[in-house]
Image (cartoon, rainbow, N blue to C red):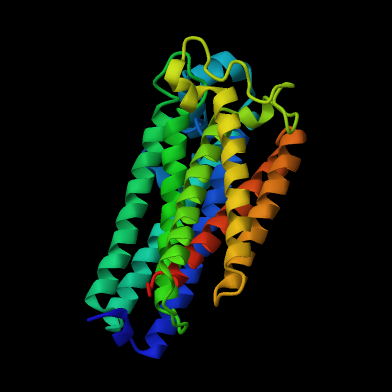
Length: 342
């Protein structure tokens, strides 16, 4: 049985629910970005999926949470002497991030249960939706794996950048799958696409995902606030300390110069590639769709440069991240449209 066997009424309501889930995941990504930019991610030092749903409700509970935070390297090396109100500010960001994740899981599970009771789900669709829930649970576990990297260490004052990248890319994968299923349940038919068109769309999608991962490394290292001239980096075309002493190949994941340079270079490649594809396929049935993606990529590139030269303040950086997610969804849509081969 396939999704085509679903009644129009069922498809319409499931698509509405998918839009809600997708919007919540999008908001979650932005909340996560704000949590990172406000350095709030290490304020909660424990992971308790059940009891952790409630914030501290008494002065004693707040003092206990603050005492645990004071044992972290971030407090000892960066925030020593912070007040309770300052701690509560960062605590609420992290608690809100975790709580909203729980709400997404609740909306997802209740929606699937309701559709199953109404017998609206085919077996293939049910497995896809249950897979989404499983990915959401995995995302929570990876979130703690990420946070724990900044709590157990005696010198680390941030989470490990590669763990932040993994956490972010999984969130991006979840919203991409939501969009793909939503498209599958829609009325639009896909015309057979030539192999070159299909391959180009897939390459652009993969490149966008790689670029978003590179951006997560930059965010995790605060590298966007390190080299703020453009088009050069500290007056150089290629930073002379691209490979940092003591890091070696780890510079690709932990070096500020390397991660920012790679992010810039990938941006140029995707920018040029999207414009070239839009021009090459302008007369085809998907010409406008390629131009939409190229336009969004251009907006993201220009905004990224604007954010960089202004030292990546929180409002500009969050908008950069938000546009990046929209670019990803446009690339997902283009890949979906070209999924049928001639």
